Image 1: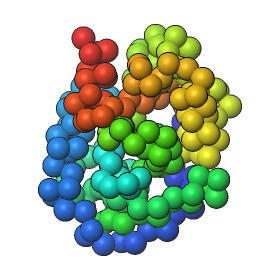
Image 2 (image 1 turned 30 degrees about the vertical axis):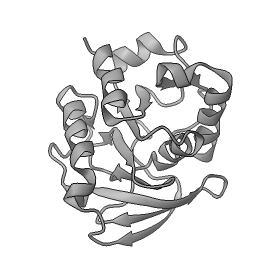
Image 3 (image 1 turned 180 degrees about the vertical axis):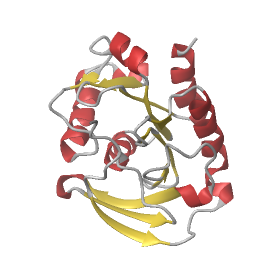
Image 4 (image 1 turned 135 degrees about the horizontal axis):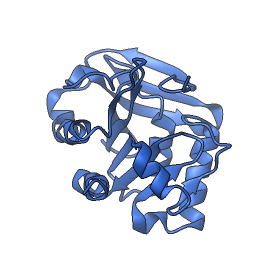
Length: 197
């Protein structure tokens, strides 16, 4: 069984209707595009996969919630805002009607590394992953998803590879996992959609 979709960080979650429709309108449109081409979704065993985020202010960001991969159309209640985190303490603080995605720390380190990145998408696609693994910047197999180790390995990619140019990396230790990012939602999304052509 895949070790998928389970939150590994210590969460401080304030459950409230903090996220509004206008906060995630454009992000949600892109989430729908990725869902429609099966880059986000749910496995036959019911475990959801993939998540999307957009910087709100500073290093804060809106992100699709945990266990929302199976939902075909998300609403504001399916998103959270990550308002603080400490990678080395494996801790994330978020506000929303749902808890932030299990990959929140991976998104966080990308935003922290580069203030010009405003969108981050994490998707799954077996054929693309097999085709791109180790041909594009790739995190090591030893780094589990959603962990401080993964966040540190992502940071290492930025310092030792051309990932900033490709705006795409694969995760060797997270079967099917790919990340894209960009200055805009369109840039992050088109990196992926272009691969699907």
